[in-house]
Image 1 (cartoon, one colour):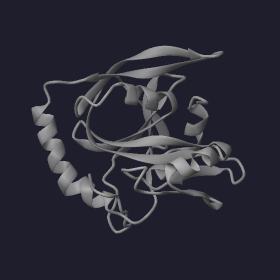
Image 2 (image 1 turned 30 degrees about the vertical axis):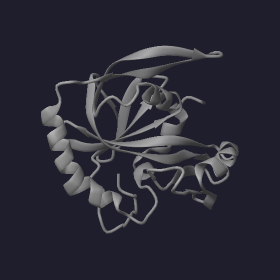
Image 3 (image 1 turned 60 degrees about the vertical axis):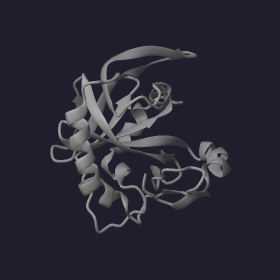
Image 4 (image 1 turned 180 degrees about the vertical axis):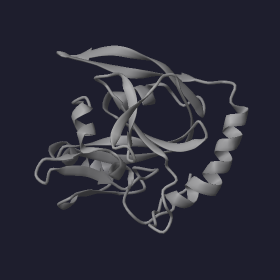
Length: 210
């Protein structure tokens, strides 16, 4: 994978920024044109183009989102974590992860995917991130047709069930072409992640508290 350097001269090719709600058990994205949240009907099938690490959260002090740059290696690259107030933390993940919990931020995965021919992004954090990691690294193309109910203490929530797709040669061929020609130039940028600019502040109210 390429080292991610970000430059504002290349516009984002991402058409939709998806997140999963543990309360509703649905993926959704913010429709900027119609100014509303749109739920995605399952099954959802996607080809993974690239997967990066990032930091997300909410800063109570400035009533603004917490966000960071996106990196491929938490051991070789450093995070710069920001909110409206400025830089909240900076350094390698192992060095700042204790501070992140105190400022309302958490580690997440920024997964660039191909859905129905469009480059999209899925932000995975909390219980969804654990389900994504637990699935293993057995392929590039996945689908979600169902959710699984779980409980932590008194909190009930749902997580997506990720299933590997096998008949994917055509999908992967198209994905490789789009990654090289469109997504990779965008990922070579020199600015912090733009993903959270596409997510409504209310999204953080719908996330599970772990």
